[in-house]
Structure formats: C-alpha cells, structure tokens
Picture 1 (cartoon, one colour):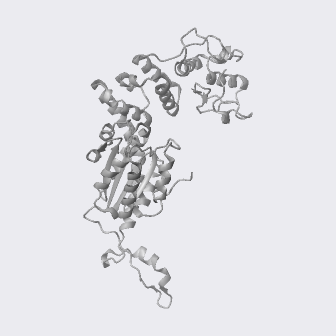
Picture 2 (spheres, rainbow, N blue to C red):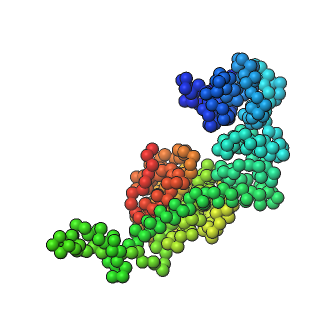
Length: 433
C-alpha cells in the first residue's frame, strides 16, 4: 500500500476520507484522487469511504491488505480507475515485482501513441472537472515524457488548455511540424483570450486612475479646475461668517497630453522556469500597449535579448516570438533596456526574473543603481503567476533590496496595483511573506 503524500488531509477522524470535490496526491506516485458526487451521509458510509480510498490508492489496495477494496467500485468507477492507472500506475513491465511488496504489479501507461493519448485526454475530461484535468495533463507530461505527443494535432485538440500547457507548447515550438502549428496557435489563443477577459478591464481602470492622479495640475487654468476636489482639499479654510471656502490650493483635471506621459519597460526572463510568467507578461504587455497614456516596450531574454515591442498588438505573436529555455543574462538585458530609456523620471522598468544570473552580477547591480539614480522607478518581480512561492536567487534579491528595489512574487490579480503604485511613485503593495 502506498504511503500518504498529503498528511494534512488524512490525519484525524474528520479527514480520514478524501474530501468531496477535491483532488489530492497519494504516495510517491502522486495519484490524483477523483471524488464522486456521493457524500458521507449515504446509508452505507463505510462502503463510500472504501470506494474513495480504493480510487486514491489504486489497484494495490486489492492485493496489499485492502481487503478486496476493488469490490467497492462500480462500472463507472472502474472506468475512472483505468484512466488513473494509465497515468499513475505506470511502472515496471507487466510481471515484474514491485519493490515494496514483491508482488506482481499491473502496468499502466499511455504508450507512445497519439490516438491513445487523445482518447485518454477525452476520458479524463469526462470524468473530472477542468482544474483536475489540468493537473493530470501536467503530470502526464512530467511523469511519462509525453511532450512530443503534443506535436500531434489530434492530441492538441483534446487537451484542456491552460497557462502551463501554453508554456510546454512554446518550449516545443521549434520542433513543431507545420501540420500542428495552426492547432497550437488556436490552443494558445484560447488561453490568451481567457486571460485578457479576466485581466484587461481591471488593469485599464486601475492604471487610468493612477495616471489621472499623477497628471493633475496644481496651478490649473480656470476652465481646468476640478471644483469638487478643490473644495474638499480646502475645507480647512472654511470661513463661517462668509459661508465660503477660500481655495488656497487649486486642483485641476489632468489635461490630455499630446505626448506620452509615462514609459513602461517589461524585461522578462524567458528561461524554462519562467514559462507562466512569460505568458502573463505577454498579455499584460498587450494591455498596457493599448493604453494611449503609456509607451510600452516588451523585452525578453535568456543569454540573448529580443525586443518584441512591435508584436504587442497580438499576445499570441509575442508568445511565439519567445524561446523558452536556455541560460540567463540579466545584465545584458538591462543594458539593452537602459539604452532605450529617454525620459528616466517618467519611466518604470519591470524586471520579471528568478534572478539566477549567468552574466556579470556586479554589472547587473550597477545598472539597477544607475537607473534608479537617474530617476527610473525599478520593480523586480520574481514571478508573475498564480503558482505560489517561486524558487529564486536570494543573494541577488537581497542585493536589489539594498538598492531600494525589493524583489517579490506577484500574482496576475495584484499586478495592476503594483503598476499603479509604480506609476504614482508610492510604496509598492508587496505581499506579506
């Protein structure tokens, strides 16, 4: 029997059964446990509990002391179990003993067959919710080395598209045959459209507010005075005897400038570990580029530097212009960005990187210090994703913090607030560690 890989979910009486509507990893093989719609209030709670553990533990529960747990599975559950077995019970060839029990182990696996994998992808979409399907797809790619099968059009048509899948496709872009490229672009575009729908409105509203506040005139012409804000700002000057407010400080509407008021440079690490960040940065880059008040530049780098600014009208073109993988030369990328800055005091540079520098460390830090000294607002994001705490170079992060450029991970939902604070040059909303 496999040992439990998520002890927090099985300790104690209340958690002795996998919770309804969740997925969990059990044992070293990390099997995802699907939970059906039946709750523990059913008359035969013991059978339901046995069913859940059988799905979580796999076929070894039948022969490894589970007391015939397979009898708890009906026809639909057995179909689910076969889908899980293909992924999580893949191991030694049929007939070879398992190390832990010495007993013969069934062989799972999806095989090097695109049609078979496509059928399996269709099955898991039938049995599980989308969030669990995405986890299982990721596990299939990582555990069974099925990346090359994603180059088949029939496989791509069956997948549940998400940010992680986009990252995998981008890493395979150079090896992708022509027959697959259009299907791959369609998959990537689906994810991009979903992200744009989720992020665009809030980003524009937040940044437009920040730009308006930073553009308000303090000595406006008469017809530019914002009387509501002016009255509120001068309430301390109210004269009761005259029943009036003396407007010592006039606040005006931000006049529409004919030239761009702010410049934003997104400098994005495209090494393999930054795949999700590259996807989100491309979407945000397109959103920022669509705002008239911002002049946005997108630069991606590994050991070389690529300026993708001319592709910002279409995030899909941006993504296929990246090349995930390779080394990292942050110093070279910052040197390029620094050379493109024309108005330092009106510029925000956002470096998105895990800071594992392969270039010249001291030169990198000197460039950051020089940009800040010239008036550039410098922001370092260790990740731009929903993946939780990232791995990063702590020494480089500490060195940047000492320069007044603290490095922190940022979710896509927080990014508009971070950019708004940077544009207004106020303290950044750094998440609590």
